[in-house]
Image 1 (cartoon, one colour):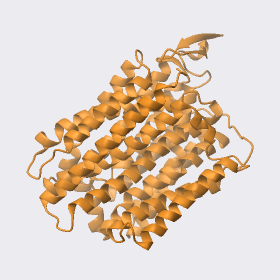
Image 2 (cartoon, rainbow, N blue to C red):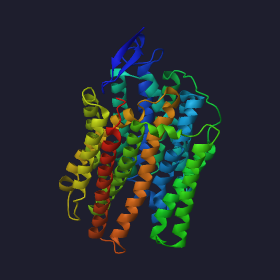
Image 3 (tube, rainbow, N blue to C red):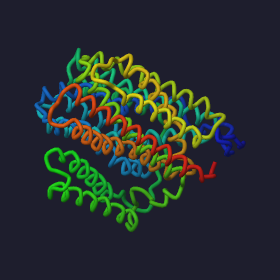
Image 4 (cartoon, rainbow, N blue to C red):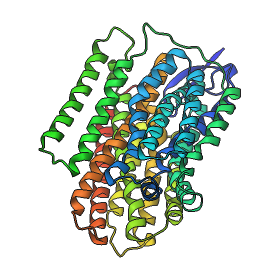
Length: 484
């Protein structure tokens, strides 16, 4: 027996009454939601947990200034670049199976990174972490999407997902600061091991087996290699502009090769006879297109803001790692509060209305933070902007997920979920590269508290501009989508 359940955006959908309000029959939704929540917390945690510990990592392993950024890039780029392959693999071979494999790989890579004795070993471990995350993250989100396909249960489930996603990213800075100061930077890697083990056990026992969607060919490994290599070269070329100018043959050759690889990726996806990483026709869905474009810009802004604020608190105001981590707590509170508000308002307003509102709040917070001064304080320069920006960003999470998977068939749920995560991670890495490079050039060769603050302030203003552009994209692309 079925009934029509009204979505928060007013769209009706037929669901199985025996499954509850918008819950797929034959599953254990509570345990599935718990497993997905733990997985997402771990993945989000690892995106930000190393930020506060970067100075100690540099000292401990003798990283160069440019090389240190690869502690972040190695994870973000392999994660973002391989997410589409992970999503397609989860669809083809089964979400639970891929989730368990990804968790095992992530845990082992974290253990290896904690024992790293050189920069190359740590960067390699971070890259393998990214590969594991690229497998487990889209599988987990696809399980959530198919377990809660419609109704109020879907709204609540995505509210929980967005809250733990936000909490992991924001609390990662706090946890990273405490671990760095009191246990040592190696625990920034070790902390993932028990979390991965717990998530593995919970997923094994709590997530039901799902039906794979074999499709018509093998996974598109060539496409995954092309897009990941292209992104790595693009970031490498931009990062190296501190040594080789934008017009130098080295930079031009690197960037040209990156563009060629990315163009080849698009050609392969359009013409391959095998199963592509992503069906380009998916972008004709305006919800998918708008949500991912917004997510790309928001990811760039948020990653850069975390980086600049962390360095401002430590390098300019002279705060310790643990104190800096604690000072990020209001940002986490704001994100969780914004997520809760978005879920509550989702029963009255469609996601395409809530998304631009959240982006506007976050952009305002970053613009306010860009008023920092070299002789400022946490209370006057950071606290208010952090609360506002965090609330705005939290406000965006659930609407973005809902829009990015709206109107997508079950067979492509993993791919759509991966695409959303991929846009955020690639945006984070590219945005961090571009804004950090711009801020460093603005700071100049003479490093003082004043010059550092000017560079960080410029980076925060540019981040606000990226979010403002995201709001414009969301309002124009999503406005014409009447699938709701």
